[in-house]
Amino acid sequence: MTKMPPPRGRCAQAVRADLVITALLFSIIASGCWDAESEKLPYTRLALPYERTQLKSSTSLQVLKIAHDPAYQFLPREAEPVLLTQSDTTIAYSGRSAQGLKTWLNMVVFEGSRMAATRKYFFCIDEHATIDPSRPEHHWLVPRPGLLFDSECLIGPEVLTTPYATEEAQKIALVKWLAERFQGDVTALAGRAGTFAQGNEQIAISGMMVRQVFQSILTKLAQSPGLAQNLGTDQGIPFPHPSLGEGRLRLLVGSDTAVVMIRVNLPLTPVP
Image 1 (cartoon, rainbow, N blue to C red):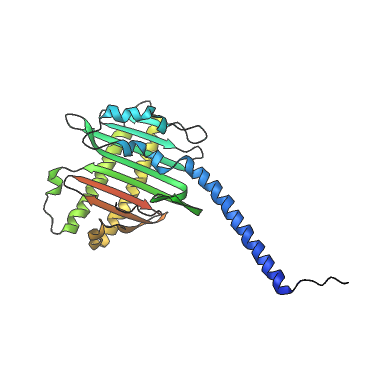
Image 2: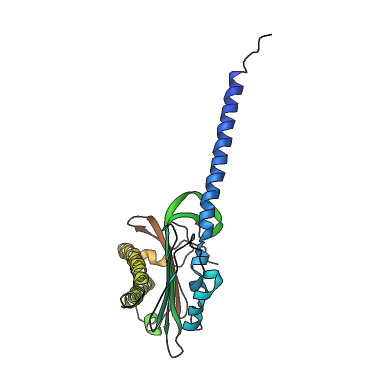
């Protein structure tokens, strides 16, 4: 008997099925490789000094102890040694991943008679982001460059009680005040001569990137001041970044505290 070839339609279906399975396997393998790399340095681990610092209560000694915390130790294959830079009023931890794809900075400023924390910052530039900061269990198949900046600051009553024509104008002035405060803290620390030259360089680079972000934000608010009314919403306000795409800023203001969250090319974490 002569063996007949299978119907053409069935053959085409088999080919399509093979292609789908191959693509699925590739995506699983690729996703696993990228996720494994990202899981080594999750943002929550990099931001440990920021997260553990409590305004009005954390002291410089408590923040310095984080340098010896096993949770903030990195293997050579994960990251370069974290660099500690400090002055009389500021402590900073700056780091970079082993492959140089992530650079981060934690900085805490202390003031008052008790020298308690009054401002804290976390910055990270991730050239190969594959994890959603708002949903760590959610992974992207295609990596993207992303930027994160978080800040919590005590605000003096003289800032909050200054009269403005509108509520939007007050919020814009507060964003400007926060940008100037951060830049002043970076300049005061990175400009100091000392043995932590490399750490100072990383701090200066981080400061330059954040300054660029705030410049874009303030330019957008100057063009559209009405956007300021949405600063406290879940989605915040959009602004263009010169190289990374769209960014978003959220500003929450309490009785004496301002909390800033900025994400560029990454989603904002919803307000709890």
